[in-house]
Image (cartoon, rainbow over all chains, first blue to last red; front, side):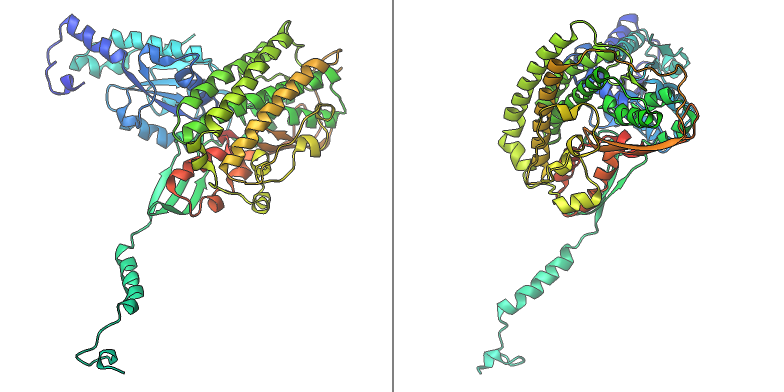
Length: 175
Length: 395
């Protein structure tokens, strides 16, 4: 969003302009796969497998580094040892950035809710846009999450003020 | 003696041959660089999860490699002390998440042994079929993904495509794609659904074709062979000393398979199958052995479908399971190697203590020895060829 940073959109942009910007953003989501545990295999099936083929939704799942990514899918158990790396990865991503938390472990700890070494939910570390419940969620659930996220991106404002207020939106729960 | 040979005389000439070692030494000192430390992981596609390998490099060559584990430590052994026996199977499904059904079997067998319960033959045969199906699903993914690690992306898609067929079969029986949680103490939850046997026969035909395809496409590929032959050789004695097990050890020429040589379990003694070994011990040998084992697993599943005994699938057990005091050690041949559970019961509804022996933990312990002296691109090939699962290492 070089337009915003250069100050060209100081005023509220015209509706067709913001529609066009959002339309291009939502169909070129570069997704970083932060695969941690079991869910990483289902994420692999959804993002790299030919049966589900997420690329037809305009998602490119192979950025070489988080610095090129718009969306990160945190899938799997985040342990206390791993948590600093997750935060560091998130901070490396350029704005605007989105997070999908995939699987019960990333949502809330899941079956390890009483384990001594597991972080009970990544929303303690980073803001989450979409939660995908399941242990592990089916690949279809992850694709549903991506479609919902694209709808949210389409309805976003792109002016400076709206961008700042972006995190005040409600979390989405795929059901 | 001429004047040219007397040091100090004006005609003295230095023989250039005498200088060569000195010049080499000088060059070594000038070119000496500090070792470079390269962090592979904790998130790297080749590590199948969150293994971190700290590699010290001299140029392109690895001087030392230290695996840093614990990024996926979820505390299974402690958690089992707070769960009842049926709840434990839910947890241990997720240790080796590619072949979950095979994880449940040794624990359930240990509990059954302490209780003195035996599952009916039909249940044991269905367990065998599902264990072999999860072995096929695991290895098919490996056969495809190994191509990805040496730079060919196409086989990975084929691996994911063919694995889905097997997952459908497992889902039809158990309801879960790869966390079935289907074993009960004394049997399995349900009988096979209608039409499953014919569908399995059809899919096994597809899988055999898929194995042929991987043999042509990946194993027969010249570039693949150039990258993997002679890469990461594990001699049989070193591998055995480090505790390497499963296909990794059989690829070093050790003819040892717990399904045949260990304590008898499931229905393997009644099936006709072969153990494959390869004398080389390199990454290509590990690929080849897994390819043959996939074919053997398909053959086994087909035999089970033909000879499935009739009868109940559940023995008589009380509704609330209390396991009497006792201890049991059961180890089985999982897709990744030897997996064992040592269960201590004190007569409660949950185990008192469970010690879990997992294959990948021992397989990875050979990495510092194995990676010494190899080139950087080979590190990724060796890591992928060992085929470990992070949950299986860290537990």
